[in-house]
Length: 140
Image 1 (cartoon, rainbow, N blue to C red):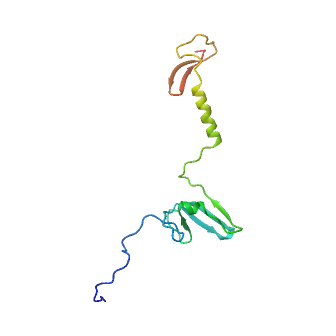
Image 2: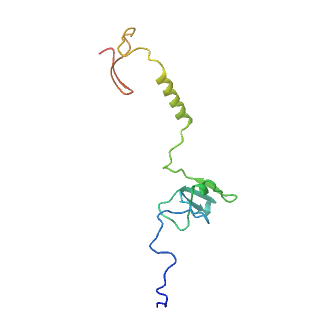
Image 3: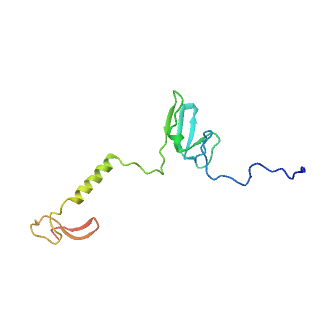
């Protein structure tokens, strides 16, 4: 039934749907980046990458709220690694990089065309492509 003022209109248009999932925290409108799930049987809060679709018993959190997440006393927080994030370099990576730079900066002991002083046991460099070398054994 229509009123004298016209058909009843919704306050929010029904055809406007946000494609971005928002943080579940009250009054936070930032985009969600992680999903929080509680495992009550194990007293564990699991925080992982954003789930592919919204679950009714999970909570989507923005970056700020996921970093500041704390669990109730006696509970454990398990943070699952996000595969899309680039891994941070380890000490071994940095040491390998430093060694490669030292090796590249070291002066060449002999020029490529200089064969003087080469012993018979050293293999001969036949070709080079980038950092790879083709070597011929001294017997051939």
